[in-house]
Length: 374
Length: 119
Image 1 (cartoon, rainbow over the protein chains, first blue to last red):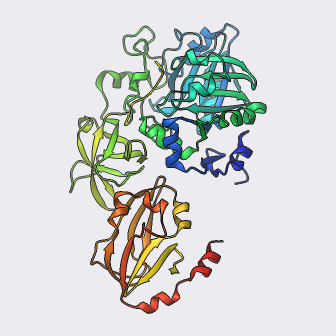
Image 2 (cartoon, helix red, strand yellow):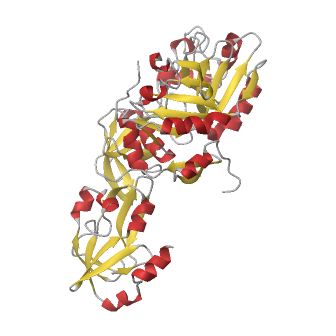
Image 3 (cartoon, rainbow over the protein chains, first blue to last red):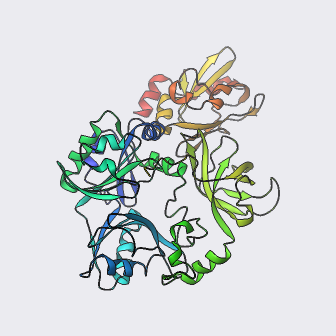
């Protein structure tokens, strides 16, 4: 794995006995000694520490401050960014002219600039997209910073002594904290459905911060394997699997992220790539929809499993885009696209696994209720 | 005890053989979440894919180590697949088979050869 990147925590992962695998061009820990299942359960019970430094952290600056940046970004994302409060973070996605999704991302109003966090696999393309599409805006990737996620009910108690005052943050609040590990950029958010924080730290302090957090009894290092089963139980999309360039945000069941003001009739309705399709879908609906899928037996239904309306006969009517075993729910959990008329929770479909059609029910997402600090 | 290159162990018990997967295999697979066993009474040939075993991340097959008849399967591991990670060499056996050609066992590895194989 010689031409793969390494995060500032690579040596620490190896020291902790991580099984390293290639992911989005980086060597990343898929699991440590506890294994995927125990790491998943530990995160929901106490606190898990994840290295997500492979993701892209980008600062967008305009001499006029936050407002012109927000205005320019509203030309690339169908989200309301102008009225976003200072220190508040919001979820969104870059769309393309066909109304598909180029990547999903987090955006923060940092007073006089915007901070954007994008997926590792799309990092280069997203930066190019922003440079080409945001006139007058300086697009600066923060390559000297690492990113950690501390997730679970014990996260607040663990982080408060390090970043004093982070305890009063609510879900999607952000803050900048001076700490023994340099300046920390903290958001109360994550990818697990649990309460927790995402912490940007200068690369030179990353290992020291990670070791300090891991020294707390409640904290275990968690790999990408558990990260995937956690986000799946939380009903969260993985770009490139549940959403991609062919899926619009509406059929991806992400219309909730498109505020009214950007919709048909809204003051700033449209004005982003693919608006024709997306605005039309917001009014008319879509032929298919991303839904939760709960296999009725014990066999997991993984990405690619074809879905049928009947136990025998007929063509495939949908497919699974993500699936695994959910350790917290104690059963297989999946997500996929089904025809709108079969998307009501409780609809019984059949997934073809190893040549046999097995029953699966459409279900509400998330599989496991969220624990955000509201 | 005998071992196959697919990391199965075989323990003769009278004219039957108990079959499971080794600790090495269980560790490589990671947390096991689903197991599908063959039907009792089924006649199988060596290398038939007769068991499906799914870990958190992926699905694998286990092949019949010898020709014979499946005489018993271990329902306990179907109900609790995690048992395979806990006690792969003992309680979490998979099935018992009555070999139709016991000489096929002679070609398999013994403990020392298996340890060598996985090192």
